Every structure is written in C-alpha cells, then in structure tokens.
Length: 219
Ligand code: HEM
Image 1 (cartoon, rainbow, N blue to C red):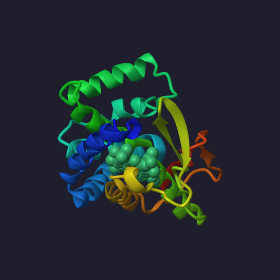
Image 2 (tube, protein in one colour):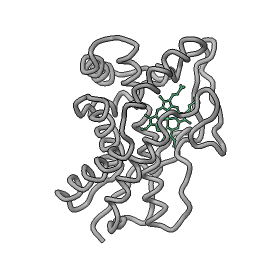
Image 3 (cartoon, rainbow, N blue to C red):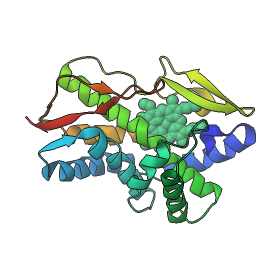
C-alpha cells in the first residue's frame, strides 16, 4: 500500500487510492453514516461507541461506497496488525486473505482499496471518539493521530504530526473530506446521548490519542 511505499511505487499506489476515493460521493457518506448509526443505536440501551459505531460504521459505509460488501469485521483486525513493526497473528492473516478475495484477488488495486479501509479505521474512530468525548465533557477535542510511521530504506521511522492532523506534502491524507463527512454523520446521530462513566480510558498507543471505550446511553 502507498503508506509504506516510497518513490515511484508511492506515486503509483497513492494514485490508485486517490482515484478510488474520487469516485465516492462525500455527502452520501455523511447521510449513510448517520442512518447506519441510528439503526445500531435504536436496538441498544447502553452502547460502547468505540466498538459498535466508531470503527464499523465508517469502514462499512466506505466499503459500500467502494462497491464492496460490509467487510468491517475483517478490516478491524487487519488495521490492528498492518504496521511493518507488528507481526500479524493468524486471525489477522485470515481476515486479510478474505479482504483480498472480496477485492478481486492480489493486485495493486486490491491493496489500495484495502489500504483505504485500513487507514480509515482507527483514525476516523479517533475523530469520532474525541469529537464525542469533547462535546459531552466540554473539554477541547484531542488530535487523534499524533505521529505516523513510515518505512524508509527498510527502516521504520516515526514522524511527528504536531499541528497537522491530516499530514502534509506528498503523503497528505487523501481521505480527509471523506473522514470528516463520516464522522459528522455519526456524531449527528449521537446527539442526545450521554456518557455512562465520568472517567475516560484512553488507548495505550504512543501514536494515537483516542478513547478505548466510550459507553453512552439515551439522555
Ligand atoms: C475515510 C477515512 C480515511 C481514509 C480513506 C484515509 C486514507 C489515507 C491514505 C490512503 C493515506 C496514505 C497516503 C499516502 O501514503 O500517500 C493516508 C495518510 C494519512 N492519513 Fe488518512 N485516511 C482517512 C482518515 C484519516 C483521519 C481521520 C486522519 C486523522 C485524524 C488521517 C490522517 C492521516 C495522516 C496524518 C496521513 C499521512 C501519513 C504519513 O504521512 O505517513 N486519515 N490516509
């Protein structure tokens, strides 16, 4: 995928990702994220927004917009294991195999589409979790992605994103408008809910700042 490629590989793979995203109707993402969140919330009394909504809804809606079935259950384990410094477990490998099959086999285009879903997963969940947490506690929203990893000359390198939530330059996030539309649709559907706990548990990652769990119930 583009994220861990360099030079002409990066240019070509990024173009595949950008072209796929260009075919997506951004306003429809917002509406579908709103509707899907309402459907999930309707059936439940107390909901952990991070597990039930913030990852599966944006990934499921984006997958559908890319012409795929709802593969969100397979994207979540792959998103937790795709960084070069992580050794994926058997579950993540099996999930990746299913994603490749759903995307039509092992091609660069399939990798680009899986890359979009994987990149969307945790980062957009962070946008939603931090936005909801800020609106319900009155504290300022935290930046979800603090640092990014790259692979340069076979080495893993960490780059600070201070002050640029969507990156900058050649690798600037091509999905920022999509992510904001998805997060806005979800957050609109969560109006009128309140937190069930006063303390927030944050994920234990040096690069991500977002709630691990965020339980809400109807206000
Ligand atoms: C629909 C949701 C999203 C999609 C489809 C998406 C897609 C992508 C892709 C394909 C890249 C790689 C670009 C490249 O290598 O040239 C990327 C990079 C990046 N994305 Fe996103 N993204 C999404 C959401 C987000 C969100 C919510 C954030 C932050 C709050 C974010 C922050 C970034 C950053 C900082 C980079 C640059 C990484 C680097 O420089 O190494 N993305 N994104």
